[in-house]
Length: 132
Image (cartoon, rainbow, N blue to C red; front, side):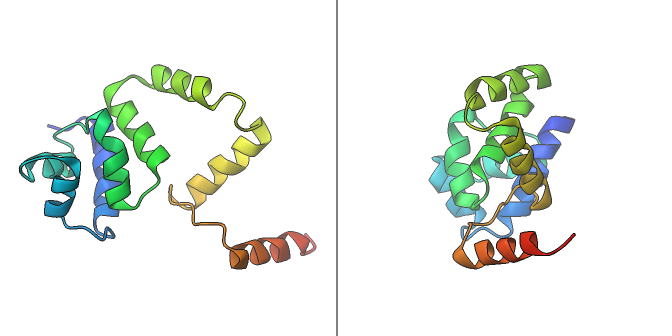
């Protein structure tokens, strides 16, 4: 049976697999597996995604690689260890204020932050310039 942490990974994968340009069979091949059993196991939360397959899976799903990697790490390790890894490897890359914006955007867009296109930049500038 799936643990709660595997369920979170499974939900994320299921959500993105429906939107993927690839079928389950194609994703299986991209990940280097022989049969669809492994990928289907990820989708049901019955199998953990191997850490070395996260990047290829994120690419196949067209999802936020960082978000998927954190979910998969959390399925393998306890929360404190994953948080420590985040702090160590994110150290210096964003101030606490910037990290707050990043966290908000990830939450707002359910982990799929869109590309910052010129059109989106114009809209944000307009939004920020409006009186409160």
